[in-house]
Length: 306
Image 1: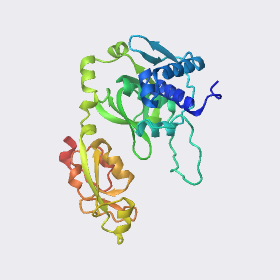
Image 2: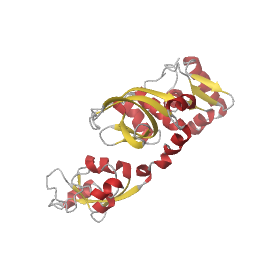
Image 3: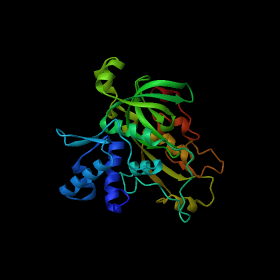
Image 4: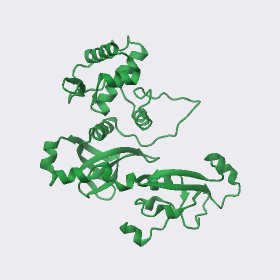
């Protein structure tokens, strides 16, 4: 039946499948808004989806939501990179179909590939504002069991991580998506039994309490002073008057400076040819937490307690 449908129908069913998998629910209004169809057409699409995958969704009449069931099996194969690209770009078109190689236009080679089922659980928890129980393997402490409250997925240039409140450390931290070995969303009744002072936990774990996420840092990048032909760098980064001005969340600043090899030292003292950019205003980094990633930046003792 699916093979007999036209491309437009497949896209609408893929959107239903995608929403159930990554958000945990979908409504007719979501489908109508996304594809500018009528109510009757949306009803037919849900009927078609139900005929293909009857165990995947359940209509909750009170909320008029179709919710994902525990027996859900994806009807479409959602390519991991397409999913993450779609999510990061506002859920764009084409997220449900595998990317075909194109010899005329090649993307960067990716060595790290998050599993789509892990991404799905993380996204449902973010959208539904739920806590997660997980097993996570870190480089410093190995495998541990944690309770997290995620609020955003982030690509740091090399890999995807989730920004989340960690009940163990009582801090907001970054967790690499590929390092989860087990991940389960918790309902409130289970969460109440798992932690002390549930109300306080909910209060301090919301995104509004993540100061490093909410703080916006103004960065000004310039061609590195050691470069002779600076115009080449200005063209590379579309600089205006020799500068590139950026507004970046404090939680992401270190990743950006590391990825683009920005000399963040006070006097731009890093002279290796790998440093083509320099940070004009290192003082703007004061109080940013992940500056061990910033090339050349010396963390002052008083910053450790900020």
